[in-house]
Image (cartoon, rainbow, N blue to C red; front, top):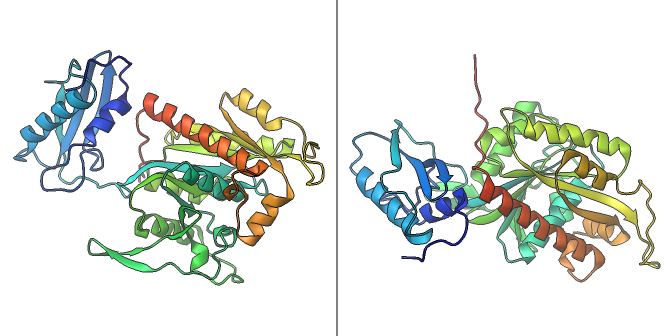
Length: 371
């Protein structure tokens, strides 16, 4: 047994404890199976519901007892949990698509041309450099750029068989596993698809990818708000969103729409913060100089206005463009100014995700309703 807890109990403490409880006969825990729901904490009193497939399940009492013991062991022996676990029943439990992925992060922008894919790739690499397991999905179906930015244009993902099912093995480079529709179409071909076809392509990258266990899975979304955004939040429970902008007014005007989309009723995806890209220009021969080509601190002021964190400011330097074109992302060199900027951004993102998970319930998938 652990000592009496000396810190505030939050839902994440309970969820982490329940991850140690596997359902009898299964290799998955009660959190991955989405059995543990409606977790509530009031001081030392903890209540939650366990969802079983049927009311005559012979494992009900054993699972409840195991959950109580796990919470008392991993959270604190004075937690008031005994007798506070209720049961619910459904005919068939819906298994999560990505049970091994802890955090799903959408990276979006209100308009194109702000460097969203550049931020996605370099942030993913910076997160991987912290020791985290990171994946990245190119959700910009009509303008896939990840293969080129990772220098993997001539690579094709292999098929693997996992638990009797055919999966697509993500390409791994710079510590990041990634998939893109760009791997499956010729580079010079235009992708002329209607919305449902593009949405199905994204679903396939999510469902058929052999993602395994990840700390973070990032989604590089297309600019604006579209079917792809809706498909994402309907397919998986997105932990949080990051909005990318430049300091100029025309880009900032679209930020509000992007933020409001994620925060809208029915979507309810927390916005983790704002990234200001192309914040200033610094020529290589004058590394201490800053020229505010697109305006100064527009993203800083917008973050303050929207009351969301500013996750980082990325300067406009030649190396970041060259890195994207050559397939050697600038963040991989952690000692360069760009590398340091993305390393700091990664720490800020990790902090905001931890704060979000400790203080908010897990995001739920958006349910599709038909009249």
